[in-house]
Length: 151
Image (tube, rainbow, N blue to C red; front, side):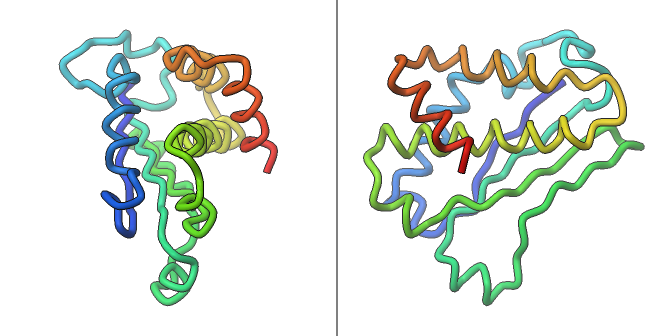
């Protein structure tokens, strides 16, 4: 299974989300790098590919565009596309460290949503554990992550 990460963002460079995406992709290269081979069934056989694309734009722009959060699953193609919103107005006020945690929390929420919709053998909880462990978070960062996941 491969994980594809990208962003839909307003002022991506100014708000550092492009830098965060590069950092996260590097840390999760065991999932995101198509040249590395992970066993196809390591997290189950339900998905071959999962795309997670957080959207970080002012709420007025999202409303004007008519965008909605979505979880699109193609069981036939064994892939999923998840697009969840990151609150732009809150995000821009945070430190770089907290922005990273918010981004990671969005990835975890996306996988939790896929796990909830699973009709097969998707091992979402194992995937989440592996993702979180890849970041080697401090206890304080883990608590912050839990806070963002509870929102």
